[in-house]
Image 1 (cartoon, rainbow, N blue to C red):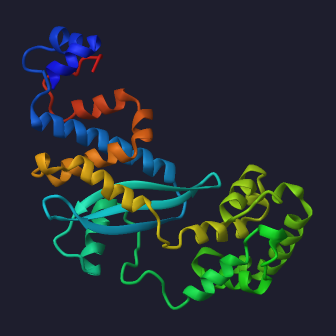
Image 2 (tube, rainbow, N blue to C red):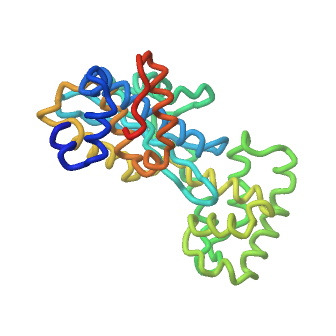
Image 3 (spheres, helix red, strand yellow):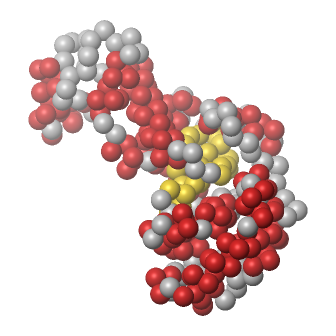
Length: 290
């Protein structure tokens, strides 16, 4: 494969045949895995940097790969600048698929101390109240479904996300919010909660109505079905095939992160990856053309 690629890419041929000494041709599987890990870690850092301090939820599912191993895929869902974003953060082999086993594996993959997850069930006993409350923020038909009491109740349900002062003035802010939304033509183009959040951020109404914007954020974090996790398993079938069915779990994880989040991967400074890779005990630096 190296020879095939060198014959078609002159800069690659120069990098390997002229710039690399004999012991730095990179065909070693160990070196390839370490390089893939450096790339995967760089992508994960970029995702966590993009997440920042934003609220997020975790989407988890499991499926068997080609070698009949149970693999748990992890996707994080959060809002950034008014837009809902889902990012693939990793995959981990799990021997059991019970909720306790998944919880344990989940914290190992995330490596974020503050995360708490509920994998025992998708919704708790307040599911109906939550869904009805968030439905009241639907902007269609000039917020025809808006119900001040139901939306105010959401602030009570998410008591850890709002202060006592917030709860005292929640109805005042909600009244100002609905009057403002119905008077301004800018919001008539909003057709769902996502477009409302984006328009609020664009016009800085998230600053004017912080409690409402926080509720919208929380609404997007509800564990609803998405296609992101399924796409991860589709990618797994592309990377781990019958011909490559013995690849290690770590290598599979790193390759999947780089493949699925390739737009982030393309934007990472290669110097950062090379620097991290060099710290893994390499005897000589990578050529600049690689």
